[in-house]
Image (tube, rainbow, N blue to C red; front, side):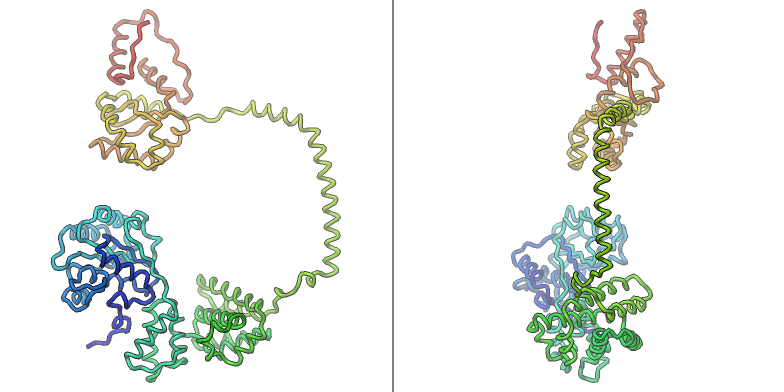
Length: 579
């Protein structure tokens, strides 16, 4: 049989085998035993923390006929077929290569059919954040109206890229980085089962290099087994991970302590020449400095590592002050952030080494930092402050004398200021709607008005509630707002306009009007101008009161025509008054 990597051979097959995620696995087991299986789950967290493994275990557990305490038996035909990836009712999809709308639509169509062998159809979508916007929208419909006996399990390392509408329809579980201690125990268990000798400190180095990922730690262990001669030693682990040896770090920190910049730079050159990677080098030095600090303050917390500390390390811990270690940690951390975005990490490393080896002034007292020259400068500054205070008091008196004149001038300026710009009513667009308006279109809009309000968001609903439809044509709709400020906001809010148009089109088949927003105050004037036959509206948005332009000798037939047109357009809104 072909060789399989350790992370494949030792992939978790039961919830109890998932390392470092006890809270999540216990919750899932309880949900299965209580028959409270959700239609959608979201597993998030760093790589190698067990998201996909937990998804497959969940798929087996909900379908296993012999499930006990929420755990699959891993012996029945269903469990074996899911483990081997041959079960048709459990589909694993890689969203990185299947991120289009068509793939998700096909998934939706297949989800409509009942499972053939298993009890539940389970769809595992790995790296779901890679789906396109259209694919997310297609998936959203399925999550809104889930089919019976269908379970979606979404896994991702970047949950911030998933739309909130998707997340809110799933049960979210955040997988955390696995503790170094848990990784070491699991690696030791695997090596004991494989009958391979190892040094405890070697596993610590591997676990720290994995940065909380079990899959990464197993991959590094695989390399260490191949590199070693039957026994995994500390040196083997350091070589495989590219980490610094304790001897290298002891020499480097001693040179920094002695402020020997030349030796520090030479040691850095040796470490880089031996193939040490810049990021790993900084991590090792940070851990070393952290160990120095903890050894000073609480040595009992390092009991597990105490046997590996050298005499040089212990001597440095007693001679180097805590403030000095704080400064080193700060420099190393800043350098670690800087090299993430550069192609020349060596330059930043050399600068950092020079900083580490420089004499620090953080421990000096404030009194020591002041010289006689500083005292003279302080005296001069005091004199300047006194003179400035005198000038300020003089200016204050002058301002009090000129204040009445300034107030009069300010009042005059306020009176000269033009009035605030009013909302420009689109008269041409209003008249265009009125020319084609019918009572039928207006009645249709009024019938769905309450449903339209209910379909909008809270903010949009509040805006539209302060308005009424006034006239409607096959291609336009005039909406009058009670307040000018709301009218302005509605006319400039594209999201609001699209929401109203889309919902009206959905409620009235084939009706997609151009929305025209006006104020309630302008509506009577506009209506009167249109009925009076004013075809060309003025460019100004401020309306004067309608003048009486009709003569007493107006033809009776023309008046009847106007009244008839008004009743046809506005229905109950048109009121006929006899003079």
